[in-house]
Length: 360
Image (cartoon, rainbow, N blue to C red; front, side, top):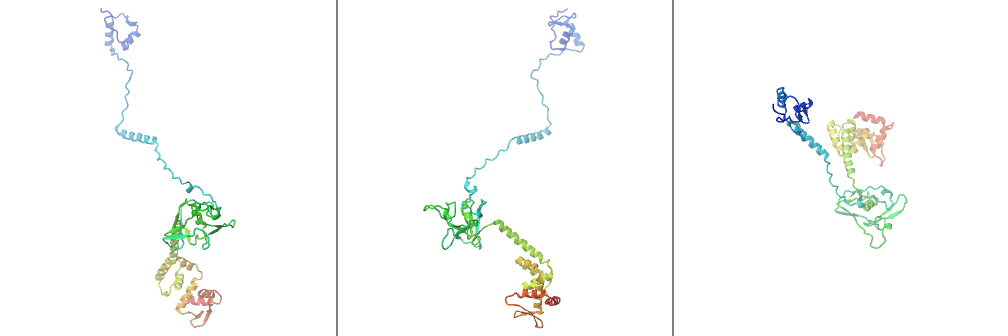
């Protein structure tokens, strides 16, 4: 029998070794069992429990990452990119240095305490010649003189101030300007091609023009919004007059035509009448509208039609019937049409009006 020293014990980490220790066959790392060690180990192998090859413990275990299907890789990359873009703060463009325009936009004090200039709005302004002319160069008065007085009267205090425009003085009243000889820089006010543009920083000139005695007489402040409003207003007026041609009725239209058109005849067809009045309303929209609002327009139409047909005759400030009998005398300073309307509206002339109306 072989000694136990010739057969090595299983590795101390193997299940067989642990089993032998548990059964008391190994004490102080020595086999103490009665069955020879070699025979015992063989019996363990024949019993299906072959000793495992001992392995050193892996102190750095490899972590296997889960695999991702290729179909999901693109979506994950886009998501990661979007998250990173959100995390990155969009850099702000450096703020452009502001031009130092303190005098231009700072609130200006009303040094002369003029009521009309309180709550002054700082903005660029433009002025134009009132009559619409556009001379190459045109200057307006900038300083008081005996020939062209330039004065301002304060509405609250009733004090009178003499005006002089100076580019280096905060006031445009002579009594408040510097008295030192040569210290006042006077300047002209010149319109080029009918326009004068004054920037917001030239507050003194803007305020002077606001109270200038020639404002709205020789020049005025240009308002592009007002010009646009006028264009729209004119178009609306023309549209209203044009629509009224087809709404007021044939009798009113014939009355207007008889008053306006020397070539009008009662035999005009409706289409010709409306065509003529449409052109008239386009050129004179307010006049046509005023005609339609005149309660006496039909009577005036009857008068015109009767004069054309010979039922009425007007001669030497008198209205006559076709028998040459005087119906109404008109004073030289009176409007004959208005006087005849007043006659028709009276009790005496009502029957005459109804007679003429039935003859049309």
